[in-house]
Image 1: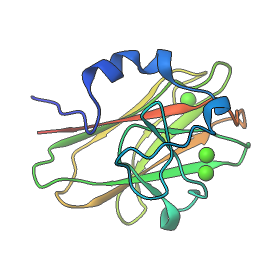
Image 2: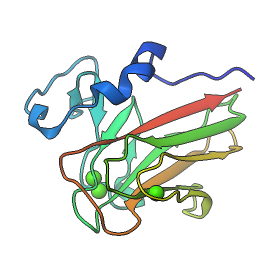
Image 3: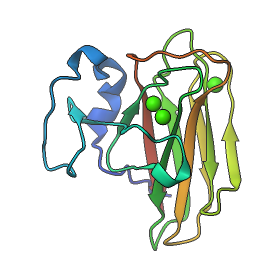
Image 4: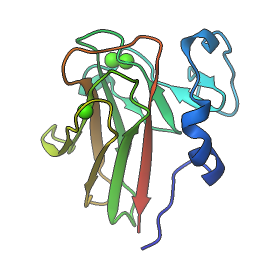
Length: 161
Ligand SMILES: [Ca+2]
Ligand SMILES: [Ca+2]
Ligand SMILES: [Ca+2]
């Protein structure tokens, strides 16, 4: 099965953990062909708060970074499956040391369809078979209240066919 990594090159994938920036770079507001209002850090797209509900979820464009900035911060993203989508995989990577974040995928009706709840700061991954041309949400949250406002996690998305 061939996998296509959306909007992200292989090199960036390999370097991702080394290059994930901290909030000290947040003033480097760059527009580089991104949608209006998006902020990028070293070519990464930052989450746009508020994004704590399905109705204000962030559309995943490229390689988003986010921070769980309080014990109750919830970050919700969405994507639209493609006509040829057979399997969608979402990974939650680069969870800060000492933090425990989890990942849940939801269908367009807000029903949970896949959940990943590994311990400590281990990566999370959910996969599901999508219906074509359908909206899916996924949520990042703290499992235990641990959080960091300036250390970013990273979302990676694969849409396989
Ligand atoms: Ca957040
Ligand atoms: Ca949020
Ligand atoms: Ca976890």
